[in-house]
View 1 (cartoon, helix red, strand yellow):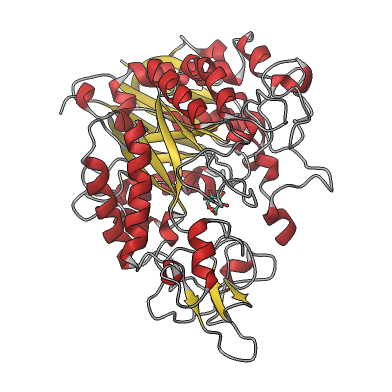
View 2: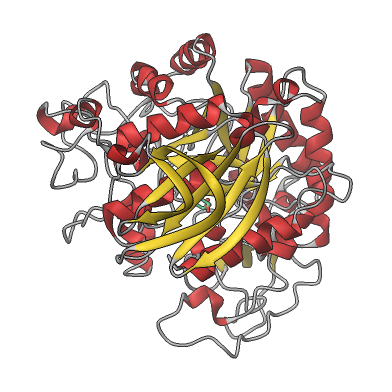
Length: 530
Ligand code: GLC
């Protein structure tokens, strides 16, 4: 297969849109589908290849759309199905792919399936969800904990049984062991594939199967007060079951029967060895199980180098790597890893590693987490588990110096960051030293160079606090990335010479370097080797 024949998802870059916060067009303070369409030019100028839109289907919005009440419709808050069709057509007309979010693990308690399931113990849909008797004395069926805090079981008074919820107690888990459930969900895939979507991001995918015997999870002896309560027990019987890998294959077979290169990307918070099994033993599983190792790693040269090597080293033959720096569930890179300069270096890392990068909206502006004043929290997790709320990374995109940063004519659902009037997409577009410019240059370079979008990877190790690696294509150009992960000056020595073609400090671009490159604090460069 030549480089140009590789499917788009093996070459391209994905951009995650959290639709509530991208662009509002109807003045209700919440973004919508028409808003995404209005901003497509931003994405084409940026140079990404695909957008993944977080859920927009009808939902009581307890978990902002990850609690689906109807899979094959659009919530009026986000617009209409016509708006979606227009958005899809407009994206495709610009050569952008569209990936939608598919919540397979659970529905909202307001979904018609669950209404039937909870209606009586004998309802034909009873077994579409996971119901168990308690252990007596008001004890839930076992010790499984919800990822969002508390027991994973909720008692339904009317029928006297407990239902399982991996997340909020209004998000009942579907029973994947019932083939009717899988068939119904396959119909959902069919609905969106027939519309022409280019793939799915499968929400909470690693969780879809649980232990068939409902065994208790063992306590984790390393758990300490202050750690995420959910991890108090090792979730060995809760998620990531062998049956999940079989499900990967069945979904893949279904999706691959469609023309065009449709893609399945799984949300998979798993250790590297387990993550790899989701590709399928014969490459017949998910196209890309999400790799969150950069989100989880400390911003430390040795740790970053090691994570990259371990991940690269574990990938099965032919499997497509992928990298993620941020998403709607984790603190933003610019806040997590030590400021805007470090975030710029991280952009170089994300976009020059081997594999498909996923950007989170606003990362291209160096957006930081926004402090949410007391009383304005929206994420139920912030209320369940103080300190673990995800509102700070979900705030509206600052587009311009217009009122509310051009995001809405109404009151934004979450506050804007404090700098929006002077630091937004418009001001950055006018400043060649901005983070937006850096992202555009990186994405343009990546797209132009087979070594970067499709080539090989060779780690060069760590020198001081600088991580170095090579990217190369057969008989083609070779690029060296050197990334200073510290606030001190650094240096990376290498054999030969070359020219800096991209740098976090633009003034360095064009410089010739020989046998090594000196780096300022948090500086990253890409050198075209001669
Ligand atoms: C996934 C989503 C997250 C959501 C959860 C429950 O982890 O990314 O936002 O709350 O699933 O659906």
